[in-house]
Image (cartoon, rainbow, N blue to C red):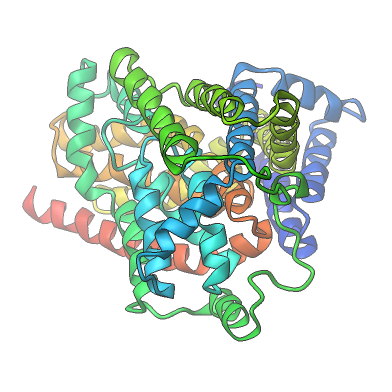
Length: 472
């Protein structure tokens, strides 16, 4: 199918069906599988269309990358648990006279600290803080919200991440932007206008300290955790295999908090930032491979048998399989949406509404709808930047003005909104995995807060658009 065509209303059926079924059945795997099957049948590809879609989507470099990344992360987390590193970290933190609020604030700060990877951040925060938050009766849904809202929203605000490089790369050749340096300058100037991302991160802190009161399903989840000591609702299905959650520390192993916890984290950060500085791309998967190898060597030197180390690594890989299965089907649905022209159809419906005053707000809204429907922020960037930014330059006469910055930021923020709270999103899946939360429970409790922030951002972009009309 040509990139400019679509199947009309039919093109939004698979993604819509997946989202509706996910909330009704609470089973994401079933919902995604049914949506993919219905989609390939709607395209007339027959019964063999579904396995063909899986082969074409999963046999790619991009999916191989996320698969390996997940396996290595699972291995590192398993090593953390087998050496007692997470328990030791929890004990070390708890000696600092913590309260329930302070524990949550530590998770919030940790999420912002691990800014370089939206994949590592939710898994690291969730798996590291889970023991502490359980002890202080913080619901798993709340922990997943903290981990999710400090991953992609933070990564898109920092100019030394893969997000910044990707967005800047898309801007080259638009209007007067001729090279990477000019493109990065536009990205930097757009950061203050990324209202959704800023507010998402701030909202977490405000909710934790109680300035913004809990409401909706999150309030119910927190009441259950505090009054009934149930961090998960009855019947919940945590998105983390028992192979990973049930790992006990190796008996009599003389482990070190420095060597078994802080050093592997520094290895991940060092490799990721080092490769970004030298190659322009953070090698996150390679960073976790290095951390897993480092931890394996340290564990052997500490007296843990080689066979036990390998068994632990295998358990870690098995433990992340629920997340990998969901990601595989989500990738397949995303590819199906591309084949059916879902994004093109959504954009076509709204093209006639764009005026200079409405451009930032409508750009944010369209990007949010596309990202929520497809579960991908980067895919949304790739679609919306070439569509909205040239329109903005047309309105400004190829001058780089606040309207340009606001439009770029609106694409970034809208993409993050969808990626942030869609049940099809990889980072939302990883947040549920790290927190060992029921995935749909995480989505249901997070969406009201994400929507509240999105509404504020939409109003702010309307104000920016009309302000630009006044001063232009």
